[in-house]
Length: 375
Image (tube, rainbow, N blue to C red; front, top):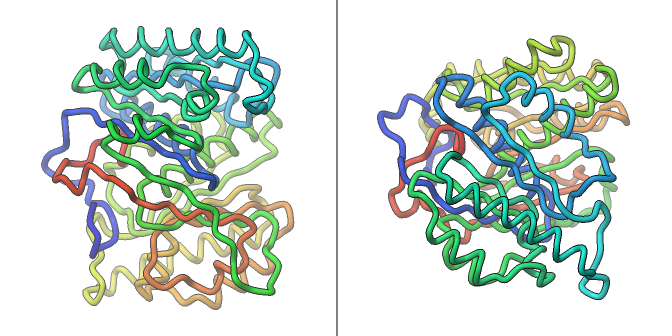
């Protein structure tokens, strides 16, 4: 992870072969969305490179009886690429606390964990996502010791993603990455506008969460007969090495009027104080696309990925962004991501703001990034 520059260089010469254990927890929004974002990238890697990049999405506490926004998009990808993704849902469909735990809940949790253990031991998967396993452990539906022991024995290549609030200390201890999402309250008298979400902070998971949000929105559009159109604009991320592009392109091919996607910037790290003319030109190009999309009313969900560092690097001014957000249609949802040293004033307009804190990151130990997971 680069702390003094902003961006990811996709033309890197090497990437890691050893899989890592990721834990995303905290009270803030975005944890399950991170899981979906990794799914999107992993599928994209398989489409893009014809590699064996099979992913298992195991969703605890999300059993039959309720439909989730992302279901339709995942099903569409499964139809097109059945060899790349498996999904299993277990548990009840409604929220419950420790006092309401039943025998059925324990049986469902064990059923899901048995599937997970088999998948981990098989060596057939490159990524296993354990969505909402943290609250399952917190509720005592599974033994923490069994989960930790199994993860320690995983195949070297396997990537594990564990999400949900209240991750137990024993799981955090064996994790190679731990990001905590904390809700932030704006210290202002200005009421937050409905439908503006911001993900910031030094931890990993901001852009990945936005991709998960995009997958949810695309699924909503599919299930609502293409009435929910999605725009994804990404700054500081030029180049063609991003694995999610292939999955998004596949969805666009099946649903051409549903999602638009635009990248801006060089395939390079942008260093503070070393901005180039092309950085300003590309930032402005992206903003014109984003501004038009916001004002048009055509899009129900708009992802502005890495807008925060673009503003923080002074590649874009704040005021036009504030004005565009103030005038956005009420039913348009805007998701803004990226770390920043100086929070822009438009943070005060957010109805939801999660700051991602980095407690542990494998990059700080010199471990390389990985396609299909990190980008």
